[in-house]
Amino acid sequence: MSKEKKVIFSEEKCKGCQLCTTVCPVKIISMSERINSHGYHPAEVKDQEACLACGQCAIICPDVVIKVMKPE
Ligand code: SF4
Ligand code: SF4
Image (cartoon, rainbow, N blue to C red; front, side):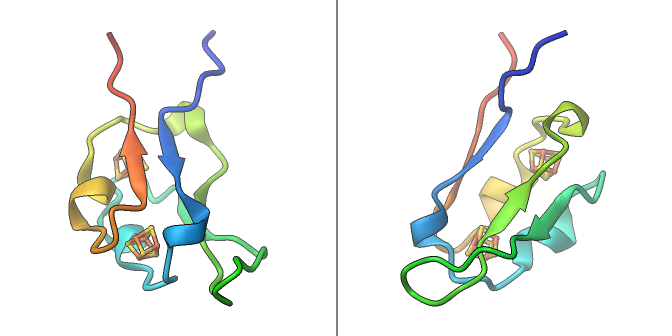
């Protein structure tokens, strides 16, 4: 089984608005306990296996934080 990440967050660009958490059909996006250098808790996906690579999170993010890797 592939352990490759399907969704990647540029944590330093995240403003913690949580918009991405509202659109994920499988509700796997949560806010990290880490704090980035701008003082925000960045969004993250821990269960990469569950990601559908639908791209909804990347589309809604106003700060272009999220990159979704579509399966070949
Ligand atoms: S690509 Fe889709 S399934 Fe994966 S984290 Fe983003 S919204 Fe959720
Ligand atoms: S929508 Fe973008 S800026 Fe907002 S919490 Fe998600 S990744 Fe961060």
